Length: 162
View 1 (cartoon, rainbow, N blue to C red):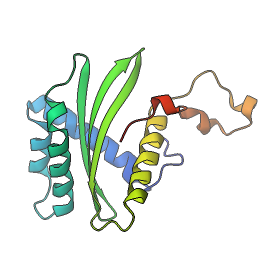
View 2: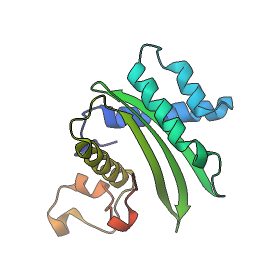
View 3: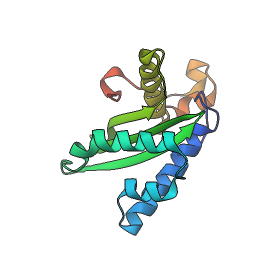
């Protein structure tokens, strides 16, 4: 997976790979993915537990009442002293994945909460753009490096709601 312009150095793609695997393992073990993670996370990882608790509380209602054709993905990760947890509602619309997420995090004392919100919005859009490759474009036509075209164009109508 090319890391491209993503921030956090190795945290973004490493968290994606690890959390995707944990979700798969929880599914195969027929265990709730949040409970599965709680058993794996060290007790002293308080920020990660707090983020997972908040995400579980805020997403419990919709996770239990998903429409037909929807699935839930769970992830949590600690990066640079911040615990982050995410629950996403994913569906397929017009043969493309549609993400309907809810995010939570435990940043500690937030001097500027809007800054944290902006970071999440930009990160989600960047991740969504990196998830689906662009098609029908050539590097020669736009004089851009070839790796640029491994990204997906994200339009305001398809961006995730936080």
